Image: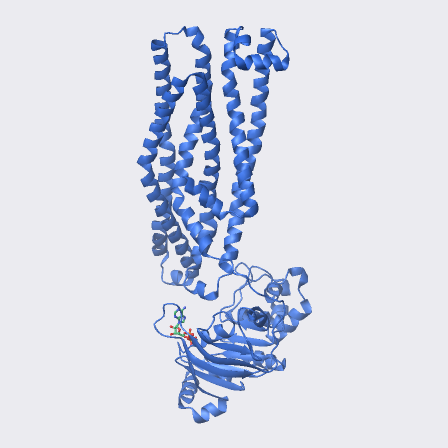
Length: 599
Ligand SMILES: Nc1ncnc2c1ncn2[C@@H]1O[C@H](COP(=O)(O)OP(=O)(O)OP(=O)(O)O)[C@@H](O)[C@H]1O
């Protein structure tokens, strides 16, 4: 059980740890206030029952001395009022404490999700290649929520409830050791028995819930991404059935846990009530004391029970929930501890490119892959030139571009920019010099202007620049002539329906907005018709000073490149201008021939 507190301590950071400790102290004080009223009820009842107690009971005598009251009747009144004030102030303390407990725990859902997202995003690109992105969303939101509600909060409440029970047991012990010892042994046996019986089942259900929840998120993510195929192939029922199993699994395990955390309470309650009644009866029968003398003790037992039962029930519920969400918490701790936050070195400046980019003996193999994607590739890209990469499928074009972009680090070899090696120290500066247009453009739920000036706050967007780059990307006419709201028209999933070509042009404008020295186009014009593609390429060429690196399947796209490099098995197999390769390279001629036939 202590493990959960160690895990909570481990996952909290400096200030949170101090808050957590303060919270435990407040929780302890709440319990003290709660029990104070109970502890004082017996002296009060004794005083009412027998006014001479004002002199014989040490507590009442001390109270009389402090207040200076000698009259037993007045003392009873003031002592009763003091208990009332204690009870009322206890309510205030408990209210404030409950606020603190709830707020602290719920706010951890916020801070933990932020911290884990930051760690996930700081991982290298290769880390993401072997993971299902739907799992991030799941562990980030759903599992953190589960852990906060079902581990953090119960763990804090457990301290409060255990303190209440321990102090009440102590009060009972001071009043009558036999009652206290009997009750404690009985309760511990009942609790240990029920908990031991259900612990294994709760563990199993907790693990199953995590698994089903993960499957549920992955299924939803896959279904939303393949909605076209689902509609076309009539796979709606199939998709619902796929979702059915994990979803039912989550519902079943959750309801099972809810039942397991609640149902045994009634059995426990019955056993406790029965035990107390039995104990009182035994005291009446066997103690031989005058019943009237025992009224204060019965009063204490009655009031103690009122506090004790809810506390005991909550202890059981808290333990059961902590157990049930242990698997989720273990996963979260593992994610938090296994992912170190990688600091990115960034001096805020772009790496200048005035001479050349050198690719020096690049080797790269994906983790777990049988063969290398790049096998000692070397090439030079002069600053200000345009270079195209072609090659059959799997030749290594995307891998090469990802290394050039600094997303993948080569196993051997290096990328040099004007002789400066791209490494952890220079990577951010190098990436500042690059504008990248991927094949699939992601649009955010924001205006066209915000999508072009991606990552710039709306109030800081330079609209002249937006229009300028939209012109180069052949987008401006479409925006002003066909969208009533112009650059403020919404884009993204809930925005204007944009064609593949229009999206690509937003992508090109986006890459140009920051005026990068190097433009990397990865099949970036594949959705444009020949005329628009030519106009876009001419527009980029007219910008003059840019180094342009392109991957294209259509050789025609690369026609005007200063140099075309043909990749084969992760190496440069041939290079030259379009005309040179047509003249001297049979494979290139074949590719061009096939393309012409297709047109
Ligand atoms: N994430 C990955 N994990 C393992 N192997 C990969 C991964 N991505 C690519 N590969 C392998 O690396 C090699 C080069 O792939 P790459 O995507 O760079 O080729 P490409 O020339 O861009 O192909 P295409 O034109 O089909 O996109 C291929 O053998 C491919 O199977």
